[in-house]
Image (cartoon, rainbow, N blue to C red; front, side, top):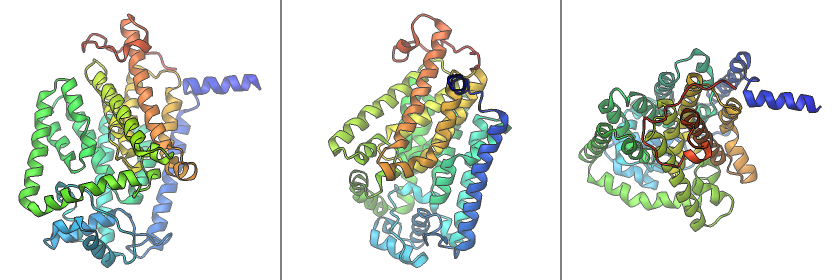
Length: 428
């Protein structure tokens, strides 16, 4: 028995268990199940509601579609009025829950055309176009055929499709912006500036740009964000922005009081609240975790770390830096995993990395169930584990390159970029 246990541990340490056959089979099984569930929801539904819990297809998408209808009706400010928004939603799917609209007016540019077609075609087009952009960004980061099915079968894809959410779009903007950053900083910044429609996902971009002294990207991102904001003000009027500002306090109520279940969220703040902790403690821990994310991104982007490792750190840190991140935003973890694997293929995987990455790949499927049933914030734990794995990888590679300090001492010590370029490591 001890011999078998030793073999299992060695297989987990080296990642030998994750052979080509398993890498093909397991994600394909996941993807097949996701497709079957999606088809069943469509076939048993009536074009607006599914046939399971009689919920609107795409759930959160109902708020996007209703906001589009209000915009086309010349009343964008009414999207921030719960009564007006609920009336439109009831006209589409009567007696459904209220799905709120908490986005800044820039987001109207994103949802504007949705109501030009019926609800179901709009949902399918929305998911199809944004998913294609997301997969294209992943392919740009990790152009490997073996990764296509795991990318498409990543559980965050299922979560996003089920909610009809905009997470594919957010991850695609971040992914494309980061892969274009080195050679086309002006274009990259223009793309990243579009994230102003969901501003909490851009919190660490200034940190990365300043750390890497990429002033062109810093300027173009800020300019693009300002221009989109100004254009939305000119297009939708002062009343829409005023309504948004008036509703901003409600966003904090949603977070602090759990109006959106904390079990659906993956940041440090809701993790503390889920465990029964008070609001001051939740904000304290959120501040600490946010600072860890900031320092990590600064450290890697200020160093000679590889581009994939920097992308992985920024995508992971983004979910930890904001107090308001839901489980379907794990599409950003999809970016991080693709970049991490790319770096592993280029420079070799460290011990335990393949097994850890495989676990992180599958765990989003369990986040909400575990949080609901046990109050354990598995999503937050998973994302922190990924960040720690990234810190370990960077520290080990840097230590092997320079050999001056132990890996455990190197990460948070200042060092000029370009001194310790990572060498290729042996696999396993």
